[in-house]
Length: 481
Image 1 (cartoon, one colour):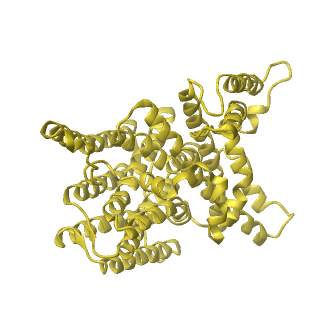
Image 2: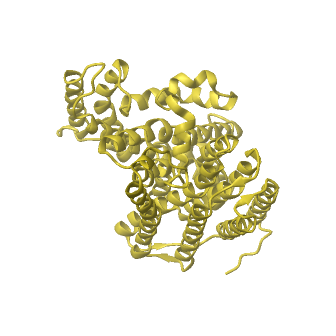
Image 3: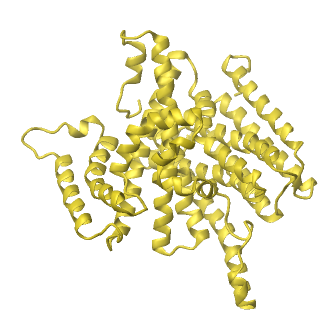
């Protein structure tokens, strides 16, 4: 069982307070809210702090992009994977989420980008071949690792090895071109680089451009949202207040200063709840509870924040607050991921739906909506190079970091992990490999200028994939040993 704060299985199966249909609706709304908060926590409370941290540390844009921003973009997937693998011991759910999200992004989102572009989607050959071929290698490695029924610690560490190889392939050519340009002419250093000259495969970079100042003011953007987004944002309001009380903002003014002073106290208490559950507060009467000590220390730090800062000036050790913001945001990811996995498992066990299907559909769609919105917005602005780079880069880094951290943690603590690629996940893997190869062949044959009509091929491909997944769940597709 996952380490959730609430027992959803008992609520759905045993509680007689409400009819089952009503309880199912409540759980579905709660699941939608959890998935929405996973995305908003990353966009509004993690990525801005990471960007500020990279500036304070003086990191180059490309280095920050493949390290800090990659971590921010993939953190919901990383925490969901860690929760489902290490706490719920549900690898099929994890593989279904990653393969399902990749199919959604590589196939469906790519089709939407092609349709949203005002003309043919033009990319540069080397960045496109680099990202697409690297992701093809990652998917093949994911399948090979899980195919033999056992995942060992060296195999899990190979995910980080592939991530390191990708960093080298991305960064070294860019650094060499930058050095050559500096030697030729100093003026070239002042010219803006194109998306292909530096690392641009992260959806979080495009999302940051689209969201702008609203990413730092989640409460200020409610009036501009659509119906569904407005409903989710309204339901999120209590959690938005709680996140402001736990996670210091990257911005600084008088309200943010007061909130930053409260964050050490409330953030430390929430960490106890997130990582220890309700049991973290069950302490024998003779002992001083750890949460009380941390809460007192948090209040002391809060007083120090007010004492050594002004509304116009951050404290000298504001870097420590940014690091605290990252740790506190991770605790929120852990809480949300645990609850999300527990709700999905409650549905799966009660309705007879496999974890693989839940991962391929609900969890994958929920964690990929941000990619759809950001990439299609870039395509409408005729920035198709960045959009296509985000389509391949986002799942690539999420898969490597998510599976790498989750599987390495499990193998380190509990030894080898049993793995079996389910029928649904095999179908998802084959569909993804065919989509990547087909897209690469199409772009190469068209001289890296893909026509819009290829979008309909991708949409048909995704519809066939979903039909096969449903048929497999209904038992119409025989199992292949």
